[in-house]
Amino acid sequence: MLQRGLHKRMAAIIGARHRLGVAGGRYLHWDQLKHRVPPVGFTVEEWWLGIKLSRFALLRDLPLTDAEDKPFRIATVDQVLRMLHQIDQRAAGRIAFPDALTNPETRDRYIVSSLIEEAITSSQMEGASTTRKIAADMLRQGRPPADTSERMILNNYEAIQFVRSIKDRPLAPDDVLELHRITTTDTLDDSAAAGRLQKPEEERVAVIDRGTREVLFNPPPADQLPARLAKMCRFANGEIPASQFVHPVLRAVMLHFWLAYDHPFEDGNGRTARALFYWAMLRAGYWLFEYVSISSILKKAFAQYGRSYLYSESDENDATYFLIHQLEVMLRAIDNLDEYLQRKIAQIRAVEARLKSVARFNHRQLALLGHALRHPGTEYTIRSHQRSHNVAYATARSDLLALSKARLVIERRIGAKTMIFIAPDDLEQRLAAHGNDRTRGRARS
Image (tube, rainbow, N blue to C red):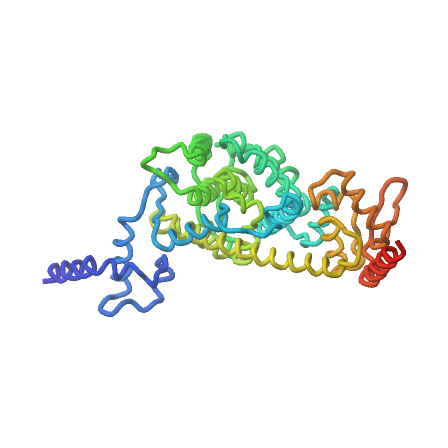
């Protein structure tokens, strides 16, 4: 009788598995589902079983395996497909973007701003304590880092630039090691550990919860790392059978997951993993990600980031949880870029409106004047202007000297060679006076 009852319940669950597997359109983990009210006629445990049965046919094995050689898997459910379509449209150039991104004269400024934002927030996620303003000033002015936090940020900035430099060629294990070396230079207790895998005789670095200090998982043994790294690079380069096609965005996300799971380095694994994600996105033609910072989104909800790893590892290596989390992060990051661009375009237009009666300034000078209007007292240098706009030193010097000659910035000299240019408190009045002078000059002529 009991056995017949069990068979009957299983038949009911199997028959309703598609309905049970919906869960409100969300890909929920048991930890999330167990607190919810199940569909009428089923217990929450039966609901979970129906969900697992409905997912089973969708799960595909990845080349990535755990320490026991069991594969990680992903399911391309409707939620995933919908977000992939949105990213394809918004990040690969199929939707029109403002001239700010398509005009070579202005896009470098946005690339530099994005590089700085990603370098700072990725480092802050790993413990860097420097404020954003101080860190941004360091990067723009090119001054040496004053402490380990600033060094981490400078390293991340250089690592992302390295990623951009290798995006047009296949990824090799040596590239990953070089990326880690750049990321961790002068920040490790053992400086010799920068740019090399952990060794079998070393204690493996476990992943630990920052709050409880509980060990969340132990990564694969160190003697497996060289082979796993080579396999990861083959996956990154798409060197898998045609029957195992993985969408480029999924590949980028899983490359991020793979490096973080293997945890091959003494420290800096998270920063290296996020940099590899950028390499994969740029390599696949998602050019918009030169301007997008995912770490700024991850930093705001760091617990969710960590939980997405745990859900993937605790539910039979189902990496779909991490995949969905990262796709959501990517879309939010693109939304942030859209909002940022709209703000910047509005600011530039406001400056241009104020300067209609003033001599024609180039886009770099307009950007500086717009910033100076909002931040009186800011000090600019030729080097910071050069780095902000990715131009030659002579071009940056010419820009600033022209603004100084127009008395729109205050020029000061420090020593024999160094010049600084200060945003005056009365810039609006100076702009108005400059416009009046130009108007009178044209009238006399």
